[in-house]
Length: 403
Picture 1 (cartoon, rainbow, N blue to C red):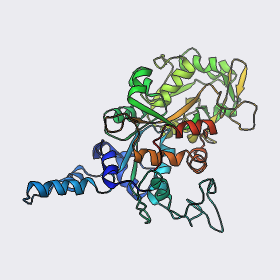
Picture 2: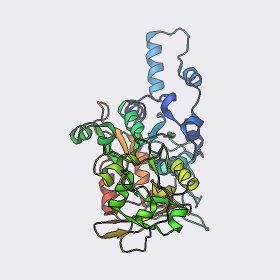
Picture 3: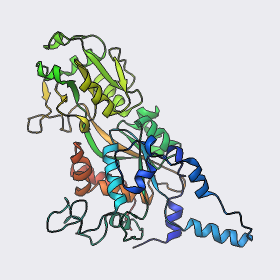
Picture 4: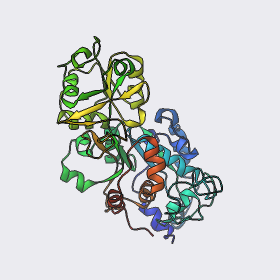
């Protein structure tokens, strides 16, 4: 099943891992989660020392043999960065991957007398560790060792725009984005299709949320037009939409974030739509949630994974149809036809070495998310929307053939 090691090494070396932009490298190696890139970057000097060539004298033949041996060594770390919306999915998957749990675990991977992971039987109940199994499907040799996958993964936390630019510039292997790369980079659909592969992990029924005082005062739903007017400074007090006499504190995501791009596209009609009503902007979903918790009269748009009792999603009515934040309702913000629904992307690049746009490391890692196991543990358990079967198959078809 395993491919020739030289072939694998060549297929995965087209992008260089840069410490300054890798983000969460240390956490990725250790299988940790929930840390930002600024907390986990390794010192550049350490990377330089690791990569520095030996200073011993050698013949050209020895140098060639040494280079070939180095090239045939273990595959490089798989790096990704970008969207704070995609981050919970990708980082949890990375943590599971890096731990490389045994099939007897039952909670994180495999099955035992007490528990079994979702989709275990669909995978054929493989007698292999987690990363060993998914990596072996694409030709990597199993390590059979805890916390030692065939290649490590590292997920950095930034913005969708940053993730798209980083994958464009070859700084990371995967660019995480909650907005389309066309809008994030300002490129055409044809340019995007020529240079990138758009892998979709799941979906987010992007909610509009309000602070607890607003929700308790009776504002549990708004029309799409009312939300537009609030963000464009045409409605400024909650009393104008059935609430209490309270000035509206309008919170937005940072410009360049995929959440902001998607909201403007879907709610305001254009990625460049004006938002004169915004009082403050925050770069990450968690920061938005904190602002809404700490300020009366607040409204915001964010990812589903960051909502809660103090940050209440509200229903939004579009053209007579109310989409409720309740999975049992007739129409919900979890439905695929909810107008603020958006795909959660991982972008890879087309290169001379990889004309398909996806190398074997990327395929092995992404395939993990496109299973019942991955959709339940990494997508649904983070309060996002799993892909329907037909979309899962379409995403699998984008990957290289398995070994």
